[in-house]
Amino acid sequence: GAVLSLWLAVLPLHSQGCDLPALPRSVGFFQDTFSFRGSVNACVDVVLSGVKLLEALGLEPADGRDHAVLSSRQDLSEAFAHFMERGAAAERFFSDAKAFQDIARTASEHPAAQLYVGGNAALIGQKLATNPDLKILLCGPVGPKLHDLLDDNVVVPPESMQERDEFHLILEYQAGEEWGRVRAPAANRFIFSHDLSNGALNMLEVFVSSLDEFQPDLVVLSGLHMMEGQSKEMRHRRLVEAVASISDIPTDIPIHLELASMTDQDFMSNIMHQQVLPLVNSIGLNEQELLFLTQSASGPHASLAAWSGIPDVGMVSDILFWILKEHGKTAERASDLTRIHFHTLAYHILVTVDGHWGNQAAAVAAGARAAGTQACATDTIDTSKVFLKAPLEFVTSHTEAPAKISLNPDEPVVHWHREGISFHFTPVLVCKDPVRTVGLGDAISAEGLFYSEAYPQ
View: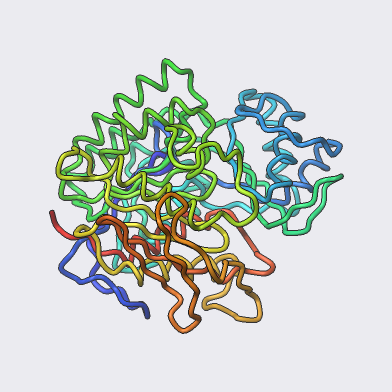
């Protein structure tokens, strides 16, 4: 499938061979995947310690300061410190091509650097491609290194091949790691790139035109965040064209949109209202993206500047409910949105409009299991390497009369209901010493989709 990071299309699933309850064979719920940005979001991730790279660049520890766009090494230093201090994930565009190339060269040649498949859609595609009965169609700027890294089940059309790879730099940090006066409260990563190919959604039309022949069961869309590197005029034009292309996807194919870190509230507002959100059936996002979304549209708890520690379950629940109630599918509203998969370090929530999805308990549990195993690089959960960080008690809302829930270790998936919308909550067994944090959200969303059942409408 294609994504805006990578457009991704998935052929019907024939046998799953998984130990969690799986969706009925009669329902083909896997669809193509869109990645971020205008073109397919396909890239090579260069992963290494953020502190080691900044030291290799000769940068001194800086006071934290957020930058919507990075234009210098100093901006990089300040933005990294800002998010490291909060233990928060973020992604930014680096506007100076020459400076970025110099930084990327230093990063890729560092002895500790590791190279992986990158781009949300590509990562989701790689995760799904581990099942031998799935075939993935990937459209995007695929260079020689990325092509070598892709699973054999990922099909790349000739139109998507290019001579050079797009590199994204993933600066990781561990819980308790220090840089100057900054100490990270949790392990996470800071991503930046100078990626114009993915930011222009160059492969979107190629992807959509390939669907008739490929006949996917699921479409995953991602990469819209990368459009922030474009001018406002280009971004507006390509978004209009993207909406037109997405509208051409057959309505019987479910579409999942994976969101990522953004800084332009007007752009997010456009995506939410008349643009992309009404065209997709499902979205995946983390706590940073959820808060930015409600701030962009003056939703519940929009006055909150940032989460303090573990995001409050009642606040998260209020925002998720508002998204589906105000922007999701109803008898009166022309929207297809019926599912949200929210993931944060300590817990996940899967929210669905009644009558459109099934197997939610298995789906949210599978996503949580993927988080623990992938972070620790183990095939199964190793209880000696994980710990519980989720609240053992919480309220389900701060805007209506809430229910108070206490977790039961024997039944870790908790369910509650609110005005035709179902919530499934599960804690996450958090890896104590994560091997790799990048791509966790994509693995979570992929597993959640794999176990979800989309009812034919």
